[in-house]
Length: 283
Image 1 (cartoon, one colour):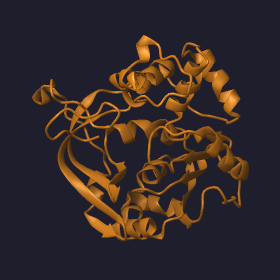
Image 2 (cartoon, helix red, strand yellow):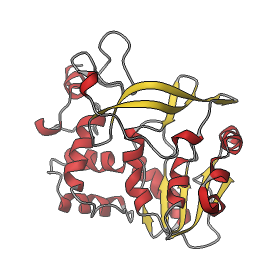
Image 3 (cartoon, helix red, strand yellow):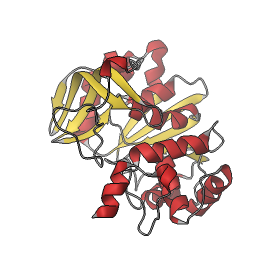
């Protein structure tokens, strides 16, 4: 995801192939205003470190040079990093946050912290079941250090996202509990959470890729109309569907991040095909 050390990486991984890239010509990522709040820390099986320099692909932008990237790992798995892909893939949800927003999955607390800056947001409930992740965030103190007491909007609740029920109406539900950007049953799992929470709007991590998987499996074109049809099939009040250039951005995200993980029986069109799809088809 963040770089390449020797050789050419498997196209199905998140590591960009830099063998033919002029790294010096790549743009520097402008970074994130919260990145400087993080410091190296370990808690249980979890570790927060900072990568001094890396090259990272955006969700729907291209490659960037990134400096001082915070990375949250558990063993050899990267669960979150403050990088172009993470920021771009969460931003529609954050931009639609308001009233009482519920975020499933604490991670580094980034999404909750960014949502707190919206004046329309009155309350943020973060659901997290791992006590070590909660304690790590408590020691980092991100929410306590946000300006103007914005962190007072945020409450972290130790619970399972599939079990929790709110004590007041919820305006937006943002589930982000998955390790990989693409996984089977994601819409169904989101629907389970929504069944208990009943939010007015929903934005789940990787929703663009899940929408693309279903549209393309049905041999349809990715358009505003087929996106809306798929959201109705999911039976979820998805937000962000009216975002400017949403259909084209979904196509870009699919080319860059689907990495061969289309639904069974999908005939991937050339405009969405990546090297990972070609490898998948040859196995």
